[in-house]
Length: 522
Image (cartoon, rainbow, N blue to C red; front, side, top):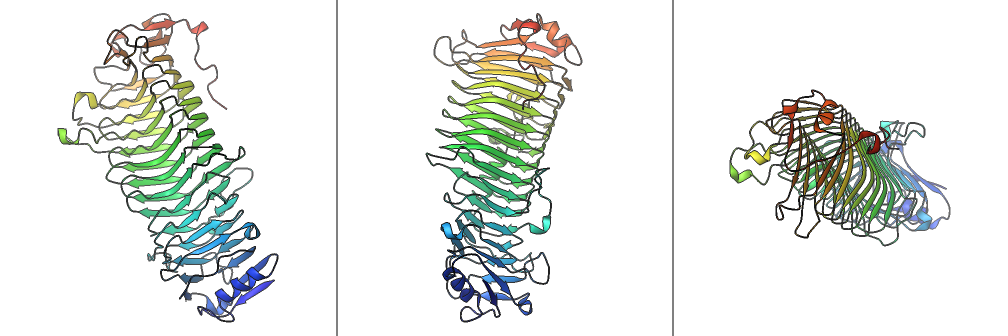
């Protein structure tokens, strides 16, 4: 049944409140439409609207426009909520949703479509009138939702920006998902200001998560200003997320510190089957603000990850005095397995990475104590580390850094990377020991076809087993090749002076010990 809104009153016949109440009490699918004469008007509420409990389509799109035509000013009352099994399949489009005393929209039902709305802005699409909580909250009970533009089933990209939502000016994160279930967030324009807020925040802490969960965050424009925040952050601390796809987004963060572009963390009993971070354009500003941060720790696992074809620029502090010495690192791509964490297959390929902060490595892959990176390919990346004023000599930025701690293992192929340096080593391989006997880290590396320009005195390729607390147990680095000159001749330029070794390096014949047989991981 269709219910027709004919006035902008808070209540009474013909009001939005009246239409929602009637739709809730009428079984089956209903629609709510607005009189065209109301275009450009705002409903000023005196009380919260009814929770939507039955399937309904609510449209404030009038006269075939894709921009919102109706404002809803909640005046500090609770925002709009979809709840329960009967509300599944509902949709809302064409509204400016503002000034709610909490979340602007709450989804507590499945298969909700949210398109062509301003959330936290007035009808002009510019003036802030933020909701005090998150722009959109998706509860752990809600899945299979579409937030933003529809996706092309062939290309997997969003194909019509007129369906996008603009989410800005809210007190919390732009979109907060309390469970990493199957949802699609595509083509939205999200702006967030405030410490500890995120553009898109996803958490998963439930013990049981569907093995077919598939979360897509595609083609969004995200701008975040504030410390300890991120453009996109996904934390799986329990349960299982089968597939996470973060592709085609433009992300900009600017904060005092810890303002990551994309941050993915699997921890404790959580795990992710496959992670895709491809074709994103990321700019971060501020110390300790990685462009892409991907981590598996405390026994968690990430089965397969690709970080491909991203453009990453990080600008951390470039200080000149010791007061800043611990607040400088803003690595371009930082991937770590820590404390029994693991990666199965990892591919970092085709990225364009530029860092300006001191100690800001271009690509940094680390395995912490008892961690494993079973098979990694780092290839065809263009890396520029351009800090020109390091605070201390040990804060020079490496182009590509591989570090294995006590009782950890990394198997890696480093192929065909182009590295431009102002400070630091082109490619650094380093192991460290712990305090127990025979617990040194281990790296097995195949290094071929790499070009390093302007490396400092530590060289184009630096292999350094190192034992801080136990110098006699420094770990093991094994390079594919029979002698150092075999490794050097596989890279460009082949210069003995470009090879630096601290400690003993093992060598393995190429025919017997190729780390990654294919140049791509599928």
